[in-house]
Image (cartoon, rainbow over all chains, first blue to last red; front, top):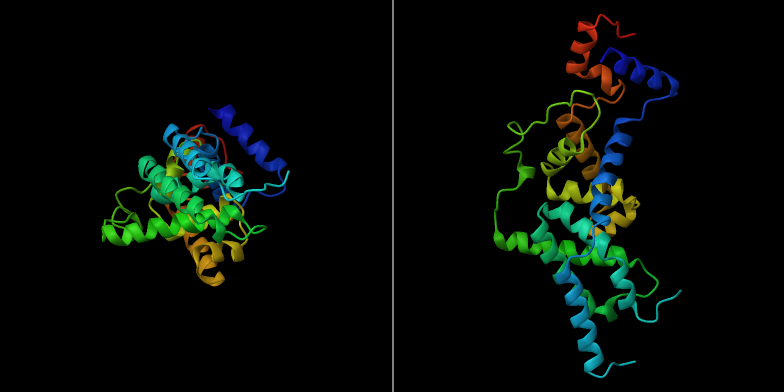
Length: 63
Length: 185
């Protein structure tokens, strides 16, 4: 425990400035957001896209 | 690499749209309902999208409009933003002084919808204030104030202070330090 805190203090001293409160918050916001970004799309969404595409193809696309 | 049909591009933005939806609704199945509605609306109104403009922002706008209009319909569902749970859910600082994601998420969920939305757009995704303002249909100053108030509220809930280190402002850590006889220089 003692050792752990020492190491932390040392790494803090190595930095010129501690990340600001704002930076810490934004970093966490990014993590929250990116966590979802990594997830695979749910099947129902993929199915929906497939249906929408099929519908367009079937009804004689404008292109 | 250019898309001939903007609908092809739409698919690329779905992960971002889901992440945005989840931060707004805080509920996975509601978020996915929102995303589905948004996809159908965007798909069938694709001619309203101006090619060359920001499609992600366009999709976000559709999603948030869907969300806020359904929120109005559901009428007065208790919103965390009203501070009802604020005291009881206050987040304790974690022992190692580092922000824990579960703590952060709890605190984030207590903000108002408008603050969460502004923080995700500006803080997480990196939208410019102007871009976020346009997406949300409000003035730039409104977005700035939502971001600032949201950050301030998070800092309060998470016991972060601006000019001192996290470690040394954390009471639990201070206690450990003194118990170990180390001086907090």
